[in-house]
Image (cartoon, rainbow, N blue to C red; front, top):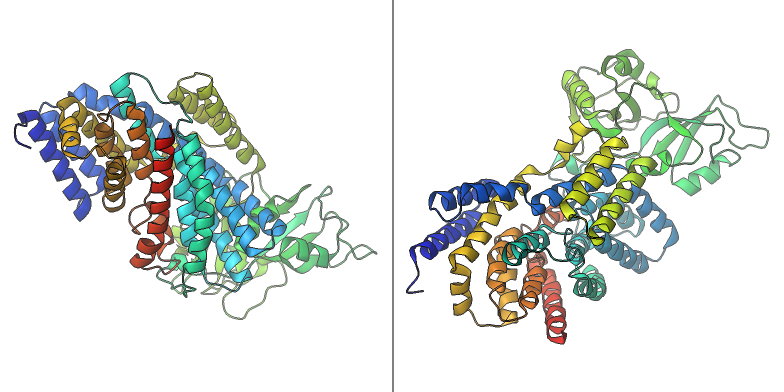
Length: 566
């Protein structure tokens, strides 16, 4: 590249440094982004005002808003409930998998793909047990489905938002919210059968337990009082067990109606898998977990393990008086060893190896666990089904999308029409909003946008484009390589300015970059969703390389067919 100006050389040096730091991974990616932004400011390539403007850009605001809305929807238990209902309707394993992959792909266009994978992992665990197969058959297709889907909306992936912002910097207008709808849906529909093929090709490999998060606790014993309008009234014990996948240990007081059917006011002592809690809490007419109290704020449900060093050993739950002291409910217990629980859980003497289901605010639960030496079993926790929270989160998501389609500023639509409505409706506490946002991702994207802008404004993108063949295949492959071995944000940031220099219409080249930067299938570390299933599925890097190549080639073919058809 002889004849480069000082500005172009400087930006190229910063670009190479950023790629090296991201590849060797000795510095956090958000710190790399900040280093890049500072170097560009110091070098006079971009003004401090312009660099800081990216922090409040449409890209960052929309992505942060989607993070919050997705988290509220995840916590509502709505998708857990949906998964359970699908399992009841579709008994054929192949049909069930195809339906789940399609739903996950479509939902990914509107919410976090990592959240989707996290939500559906317990469901896939249940499917694997039902069909006597290992998790390795199911989790990688699940991750791929979530990654595949986000591309068909502008706000479905961070890469599309970056492309949209760089398009605005060049042309002074944003892309339509469904700019990539046709090609995105075509890739989804073509990839669903490929995901089934990947399921068939994956080994039925035994999972390994690498941390306490992988430990599978059995069923919890919970107490629930039957309300006077509960839909369980009039059903027999066996009917309830068969319909809801639970086991009723006893009914208090120990009597049924003369017909042998459940009636209002009784308390059920039930054995419930933790992933069935959303189903139990969604039963119509009232099935209240005991103890009941208006003191509880929030509905976080955490699994906590009693270790040999815990200070609550040999106490009963009623001895602890946790509700009054901490505002926390102990709503369930899983007894370690071969112990069986038939009476009220408040009278059970606690032993090492027992696990407790704790419900309350996150801060209250954390304080109680810290005081008594309890260990959290799962980082994700369990959820109860909250109809209002689920309905409000879906409504604000659809409302913000519709407002954007009608011409409203997309950032204002998601921030005002989304986050503020969530707070005013009581679906989320404003203090929790800050916890729902992945600030490191936002900082990385905001700071790295400076690099994309600098490449265009300095002329470096034009120089690089003049060296590369004007081939959409080459553009796709280079973008995909960067996305898989550096990260997808870098791929979109680096390659979009280059795509914008392609001959008219530049939108074709930008579409190629959008599709290629989301083909993060080849390595476990190319996408957080891939990393999330890596240990539970006991996968190996070659699994990602072989199976991911199938989807990469398929995406490339459809992208080229689409771009040449226009």
